Image (cartoon, rainbow, N blue to C red):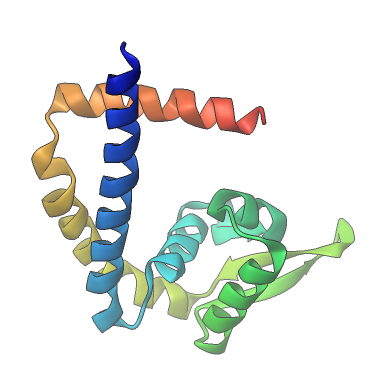
Length: 146
């Protein structure tokens, strides 16, 4: 691969990532969510017991501790998430998705999936999606080592 091809791939990655995230965020706003709210709810929804250690959630969100605390506090105020102390570590805590959070998340998740289908999957063939998944996995593994 030439240097010019690599730079083109990088620029397209940055530009398209920003465009998709911006549009997804815009589409979530009428439902009272931003993309970061949605991502926290999704991670908790998919987690065993619908709960994650705050440090694990922060790592997955790529958020600082203070930004994550702010994000989770905002969701707690809505009754969608609660914080629980970690009995195994007095300094640690869990973020837990509440029943109200599940009820709020599920209809938005269906709509969000349709938006992702429209904005992303409709433009990507199955072969391209497979190659892209492999590339993103390699990138994620590389970044985890840093």
